[in-house]
Figure (cartoon, rainbow, N blue to C red):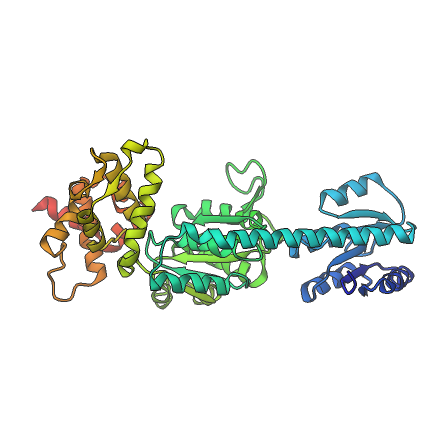
Length: 461
């Protein structure tokens, strides 16, 4: 199709002129540069549909031009040209992602045909990408259950920001579905063909997290028996979800800042920077602004991450969605049961679930429904199958410290944690399962509220 943009890279002026004249006659818009560095600058600053590059050039050769273009935009077809045929260099070029390998004295018709084929291939890929994106757009929110006004606002905001490359910061309590929203952003974006990679920053010690994020070189530490790619490199061309980013150490924060500012990483033990091209979505259940004021989180990194903040509501703030979620989880856990064993929930049991405060949010609700489906002896899930802690609140009209005049959410959470830990005899793995949070989150909450001291006080008493 006429009007498509072609970039020619060759240090021979006569070759640039020849190709430029020929391709302009075909209706293409042609730009020529005489070295690899200028070619990369052009790709960064302008949109091109295809690139023709000489393989033998002073400074940056054609293979390096190919590699850097693929890092910047994998969708651009790159055609390698050479004055002398070489099977070895042809194989290397194709292995690194070149669309085709042309001899410079090839016939004009052959050059035109290769360019047409490259453009056709790009067009088909873009159409497939658009189709895949549209299919995902109609289905990906089905995994996020909610029709409340609060969730409707979230869905509309995700639609609005998905196609941008801006960094997104998701705020929300544990169990509110931050990773589901991150996936929805990815699958509704132009990066849908790329990978979606995620990591929980709070679940790993600093040394292991650094290696996972940025990779390492062989011999950089004990056990590093070979080079390893970091997850930033694995996520190339896609979306990287950093959960619990507020738990990162100052050292990791400095390296994350470099990624956002320079778009490059340096593996542990390495010296050469590696270019990365990823869209970052971060998440936290902490108050990062407060952490910045307390010098626990870098201010410059916070502002780099907080470009588009999205605040996910807790389940207690969208009670209208609880019946929808209950029925969704019932369908999920009924799938493995025979028709005669499948469960339904009574109106009274549903009322108990709707009136509960759900400190563990959707994850806690899912655990409660799974437990009820397993324990219910009849087809109906009644109030008896609902855990005691939920029923007690319904019966008394108050829960734990709710009788205080002005209870704070922190006080409520602290009291609830103490109750669950006491009920589970301080078996933290069991307590975290009841709460619907991971063990690392529970450990941090125990430290935050000084609950070990509360336990000591109880034992003394």
